[in-house]
Amino acid sequence: MKRELDALLALTAQDARLRALHEKLERLQAQLRQLEGTLAAEQRALDEERRKLEELKRLGRERSAEVDDLDAQLRKYQRQLDEGLLSFKEMEALREKIASGRRRMERLEEEAIELLERAEQQEATLKTQEASFAQWKARLEGEIAELRREIEHQQRVLEQERAKRDRLLKEVEPGLLERYRRLSADYDDPVVPVRDGRCTGCTLQLSEITLERVREGREVTTCESCGRILYAA
Ligand SMILES: [Zn+2]
Image: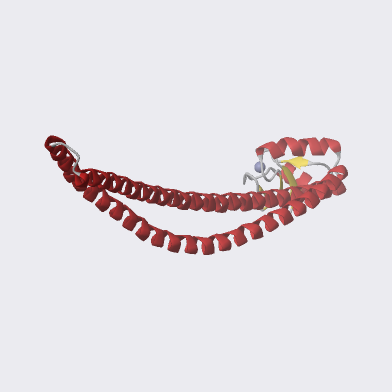
């Protein structure tokens, strides 16, 4: 019995090691997802700023083109006036068109200048942001690469430890293994030591008979309350 219990204890210890490794791997993977998410979000925010700026520039250029078109139109009107081949009424209408066209052109010019000035300011701000982002990104990518290496390493360790568990599994008597499996579904610690006459899993004060059986170690003994497998500390 002693040998069987030892094999089970070795398996128990290995399972605890595997659980800890698993948790560590999950923590690292969560950390990786978080870093990648942060990086992607910052990149999207910056791309959006860049897009807005390009839109502003486009509007500015559009206004400038409108000014140029209008200017050409007004020059054409002016030439028609200068040629003097029109009737008085036609000339009056044309003068009115030129006057209102000039007012419109002034407004458009102001708009174009304002848009282009805003674009210029935002371009400068964005350039600074992009520069500091590039630095931050490089640092973060370094951290991400480091984390990926660490995860790969931990995955290899986990595989080795799993292989070790498979070997330990073969050492445990099948009936005992089955009992261990059932208990493992309920408890992280299905095999516990007895201390001061108590089951260290549920803290029950064990009966004299149970304690005696644990001390003798001739058969597998379980806690009367929680059913955990007991061994002498
Ligand atoms: Zn118990």
